[in-house]
Length: 360
Image (cartoon, rainbow, N blue to C red; front, side):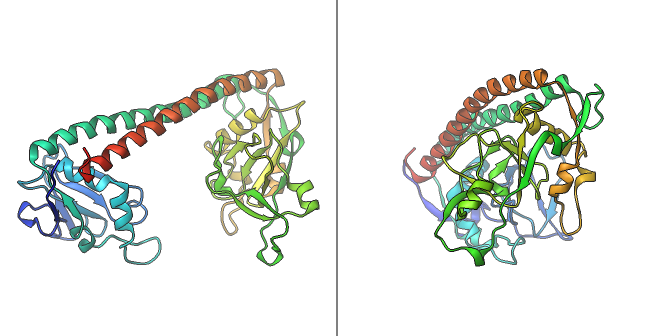
């Protein structure tokens, strides 16, 4: 496939460039315009859309979006998929200007992008293939999102609302159900590099999942290793950030510890299952059940004392075990869904690369 590469600015006769006119503080756009977020972090997350089904013209604040308008030599979908590329987004990120958290992609950074231009029929053919791959990717992602609500529905069905306790389960303090403690404080002055061990931070704990993509190390001497080592079945709970976010440690690493930003909750096996504790934290966090346990002195955080004093409903262990079996079966299914989502995303990105590199 032969391409003619031109910058957005050089093919101005097609209007395939940022629409910069401003009317009363807004950038107007119309059907077929490609709208690209240019402010951090929306642009970094790939926020992009094509305007459709507009009855009247509409406008966005002029500082928030680039509006790209197709002309005679290009179709909107070609522009849309071009700017969806990770490589294009990274290139624009490097040219962002402004203060941290409020950086923006300037107009000239977009105008300098080289836009491959095959003939219109070829653009339409490739765009149709990308549409199918994108639909598959979004379908897989939506299925994964739906699956996330399954356990929440099962939890409510078995145990009722965690905050109001309509089934009148016995209520106990969290500290009497789980042995809890905060992790080790990171003190750069105390780091010698002689006892480096991997440890988990707030960022590593997602809802019902431990993320090991970025595991850091710090010193844990012999006493620290005894005190802060994680064991299979430990529940890690975020002290700050998204307060209460929790996941189970399943010995994903041979040896691992945890930082002070996390609580380690070790359930009493005669009282609670870790699967129940994680879903209980989700239910409380999303219903306001942790509000009275969160301090707002400097930022929202759940202190060790307040976690121990958190009153929680405690259903019979047999019912919790039933829920744990459902969780285990579900997690196997969810792993398959995540792999399917990963493959669909990889296919889409591969096709994007081939489309705009001339390999298609």
